[in-house]
Image (cartoon, rainbow, N blue to C red):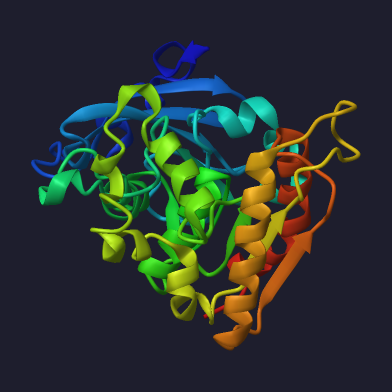
Length: 320
């Protein structure tokens, strides 16, 4: 890992990357450190009011010709969201995303979403507040990247597992923000049945958290759960080009012999339910790849990223 201070002095600090003479913003997120980690890969350390003033990292896979601080050019932007138990490095560490030629003229944003943040502003027993991942991503970070780091207003979003749910949530809860969305093995209908709900609560409890802090109790706070369940937001997604994929949890061609995944089987049922709901809602631009045998694992998510990229990039490159 190479600090930009030694690699490229013009990228060393957020202040140097901002317009000359511009003061640090008094409100909103701010970049406090910048690090070049590889060719075309830059990490921004961002201090966020929505996260209680904590600093989290965001990895950018930059397009060829990208220059930080150049406010004259803005690039189409693909957001890639990581899954539970991962982080902002997951996509570059576990896939070939940095070597995909078709992404050389796109700014790819891979933000930290918390070990189990669920791309949500946590309910916190009705008090709200930290962590507010949705506010950080769709508000603070988006504005920061578009102001100072070359992100354009033409966006698409994709994610895996928890991030697949996040991609659909952001597209549904912020209509018009993303021109297309893709979910790979996403938790897209956590209210499907008791098994699905209890499984998600188990993830919410990760790292010793109180699981009710995220969305509350699935019965008492059902409205909060429904507001974060893509199945219940299907009408908001009906006009957005979507890609949904999942396996059935049995041993697939990219798995070691004997591998199975109850988690993937659950999410597969959720995805089938969402696809049917979208059809009833009149959605006409939904691509599904329910590929049968396959577990909840990275080889499938890399493959599905490649499968969905034509749709995502077509949306980014469509005028208007």
